[in-house]
Image 1 (cartoon, rainbow, N blue to C red):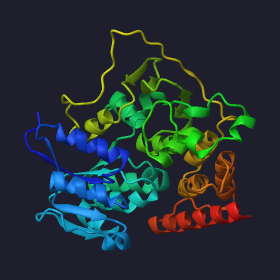
Image 2: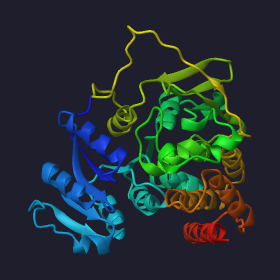
Image 3: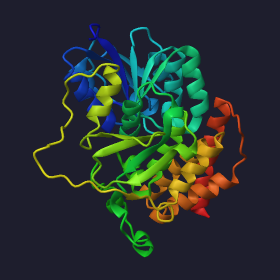
Image 4: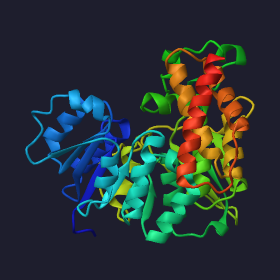
Length: 387
């Protein structure tokens, strides 16, 4: 059993994953300790977290906003850092054992890269890191001897089932998806979807961007790409099924026909704790299944005609190169446009496909080239919206 306390840097501490992580750490009976917190714009909440936890560092990545904020009540023992470069600085600090990468979107790539380069353990809740730069990131982790542990509930489920088995024993992994709030709507009904309706997820409590991704199934598209890199799989070894109850988080079908699933309530505390405490299992505060009640679990095929984002996910997982970075950036920009009222719900995925098909594909890009194509894809979505 573990004896030494693990010092955790929680990047994205004011988001849904970050807040859940702080609850897990608080309940760990001293096995886990917060050494750093970061946020982009929720500075009042970040200050409250710092006052409660008194970490070694607090990072406000929006430097301009942070300079206007009143930090007078920040604990004396906490050092305040500004800007995204501070994330990489803290990620490499000797005091940090584990980096919880919970920053949403491509903004989380550089700090994750720095942590892996410094041989740290990264609990990865930022799927965009592997979607953008999966091959480069996995190579870096292997070269440096760093650990990359999944926090997404689907990938945590697969990780828990696979253990140390070789991918050659796997016929396929099957990612489960709730289907979001619109899985039964007609094409005409989908055209009328409002922002308020899209933000009302039936089973999970998540941030707005991820909730919209769930409604379009783009989150599953990104998870297909992440699975390809995380578990060294081919696209033929990855499947998706609709499971509205969100109890089975994913399952693995082995070559001998055996299927093993990981189950639990739709509560992110369990996969967060599993990553932070790995390789040990400890008592925790995650919700439990109540086996005294009657359960009915449903599964149905995922319809790519209804959810064309899935097709994009498989295409990008197969192609590799710059395609994942373009898809991710285009989706982030398209979701932002939908939330702002500038794009219809049913235009999010077509915008992504248009940008993806028009980009200058590179099979083996550098990290800098991936960041360049990320910026290009965002600008292309803006042009697409304004056209």
